[in-house]
Image 1: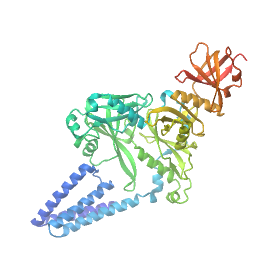
Image 2: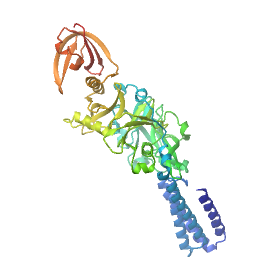
Image 3: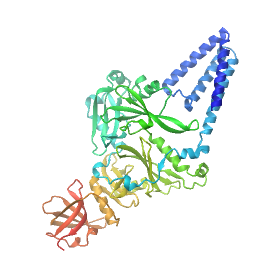
Length: 552
C-alpha cells in the first residue's frame, strides 16, 4: 500500500513540473478542463456525499472517474495526449491497482480468521443469570408497524401539524428513562412546506411507549433545524459531510437523551481488515437536532444514554462471519462443519437500560430449529451466545397463529424473554388491519406449549398454567395467595382439559383452575375451604397456579 502511495506522489511531482513548462495555449485548455472537472466533482459530491478519504472505495473510484474526465477534456482542448496526460494516466492506473489490490487483500478468502474474530463472543453466557423473570408490566407489546400506526393516529389529532408535516417512518427503538420506546421525527410534507416552515424548524417528534402503547407528539420549544427531510446544508447527511469531510459515516439514527432533547447519532466507521474489509465502528458524532451543535466521541466514550451506535445490519454481518468462518473459509464453502447462520429475522431487547439486538442461530441445513441465540449490545458491541436449542422464530410464529387460526391473526416477530424460569418467545397477534388483538407466549424448547390471551397478563398466567400442566418443574413466577370459602363453582372442558371456575366469598374475581392442579377439584362444592396461589392478570379472571383443599 505504501509503495503505491509513493509512486502516486512521485508521479504527481513529475506532473507538476511538466505543468509549469506547458505552453500558454495548452494552459488555457488545462484550466478549462480543470474548471469543468472541478464543477463535476463539486456537484457530484453534493449529491453523493462521499468521504474525501482514500480508504473509501467509492471515493477512490470516483476520483479515478474525475481524473479520466480531466484527461479526456484536456487532451481534446489541447489537441493532443502530451506528457502531462500520460502522467495523469499513470496516476489513474496506480489508483485502479490500489483498488484492485485493496479488494484482494481485504477478502475473507485470505482473512477468514480475522473476519470471524471481529465479534468478541462470550460463549459462556448463562441465560438464567442474565435474564431475570420478566413481568407483564414490562413486556414491550408494540412492534415497529404497530408503533407507526399509533404515531400516525396521534399525529392526525394535531390539526395544525397535519397540513404541514408528515411522520417519518423510522421509529427507532431506544430506552428512555428505563422504558422501551420507539421514536421518530416528523418531516416536511413537500418543498413548499419546507420553504414556509424551515425558519422555525420541525416543531415536534413522536414517541411511543412499547409497553403501554401510549403515543405522544412531543412539542419542542425550539424546532429541529437538522433532519433527513431538510434541504440543502441543513439536511443531516450533508451537514455531517461538510463538518466532517473525511469521516466515513453509517446512516445517522434519531434518538432522544434523558431530558427528551432530540439528537442525531452518526456512527463513524473504518476498515480493520486489509484496505476495504472488516468494517467496524470506531466512534460516533452526536448532533443536536435543534441547534446543530456536534461532537465526536471515540467508541469507548459515547454517552451511556445513547442506545444505537452499531447498526443492526453491521452486527448481523459480523455475526454471520462469526458463525461462518470458525473453521476457515474453505470449510464454510465445502464441508461446512460447525457452520452456523442467523435466522431470517431479528428483534430488539431492552435490558439494563441498553438496547440489544437479538437473533437466533441455526445450522446451515435449515432444519427449522435453533442451536442457540445471540444478544449484542448496540452501544458497546458486547456479545453473548446462549446455547439453548429450540424452535426457530418462524416456527414459533406459526404455532401461535395456529392457536388462533379461526380468527386469522398474524404473529409479529418474537422477542425472547424469561417467563416462569423458561426461555420463552413473546409475540403479539394482529388482525388484518394491523391492530394488536391478542398476545402469545411460546416455549422455546417445546413450541407446542402455546398460551394466548387478550391481555399480556392473561396470556402470561395461561402460560404458567400450561408449563405446570406439561410437567415442567421449577416454574418460577410472582404469585398472590389467599384462602377462603367457595361461594360457587362450575366445570367446563377447554381443548380437552377440564377447568373449574369458582368464586371465593369476599372476592369479585373469577378463579380458574385446571383439574391437573389437584385430584380433589372435581369433588369441591360450595362451602368448601381452599387456599390458592394465582398470578394477578389485571382482569376479573385469575388463573390459579396452585390449590390446596383445607377441609379434606
